Amino acid sequence: MEAIITRNLMKQFGSLIAVDNVSFSVNQGEIFGLLGPNGAGKTTIINMLITLLCPDSGFASINGYSICSDMDYIRRQIGVIFQDPSLDVNLTARENLDFHGMMYGMSFSDRKTRISEILEILELSDRADDMVENFSGGMKRRLEIGRGLMHSPKVLFLDEPTLGLDAQTRRRIWDYIRKLNQQFLITVIITTHYLEEADFLCDRVAIIDHGSIVALDTPDNLKNVIGGDILILECGEYLHHVLTLLNGTFEIIDMKTDESRLILTLDSAEKKIPQIISFLQENRIGVFSVSLKKPSLEEVFLYYTGRSIREEKGSMSSHMHAMMARRMRQ
Image (tube, rainbow, N blue to C red; front, side):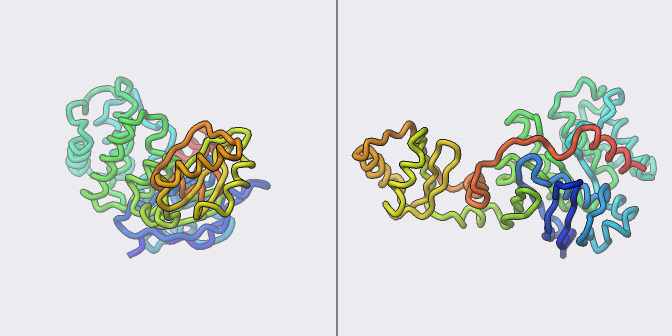
């Protein structure tokens, strides 16, 4: 059964089309990823689904309820973790969870049971009565995720949940998200620009670029679209000359450029590397470096967009996120 349905969602801010005719559905219990660079429209999609923005056109529903006409119901059915920190650092972990439960009208006994359950899963039981200001960044993020689950939501939205965390802490957060998804059978929607995060976590991924979905499938199926091996040649100023020389040779499946790199897709690339280098040397072209790898979501993004995923200024400022968080509590 589908937990989320979107059809032709559009959102524009002045002359900027932030979300352009987006359609997708998410199955109950699925971890669904919106993958794209900052500024691609991921957060705007999330903010429409959690009823903080109304689409200019199109339709979306959560568990059969419209995001525009059933806002109060939807807000009781979802949990949201924003990019920006929103914990009260002057309270303990237990107090942060308890306050959230009270905001949703949970009884004292239900709050007590739920707090113990969440703290145990997130391995924070021994820090339950410590002030949050003394927590590490990873511990704060885990607590925020746990707080979003206090009222037993059917759908949990995570907007860049590991932004700013180190690689080891990010991996631990991924493990906790998987555990929470499986234990509570909760549907999870996650936005990220970390390729490895989408690959590890998500059952399906929608690649977002300039407000549009350019591809949607399981991570494995997306990688299989490319086919062959990925051979990357660092060519510097010779890039376009090399591109011309190799065009139509060595049974190359696909060729793309990324700044000073030539990215080739071809079968049995390891056997062909010596031949390609020799061929270029015969034409007095030097290659600065050569790397070989199997297709990844990075190559998938490059395949569909013609460039590597990149860091850009986010589509919303910190004060906008804070304002939206306040509106969610109203």
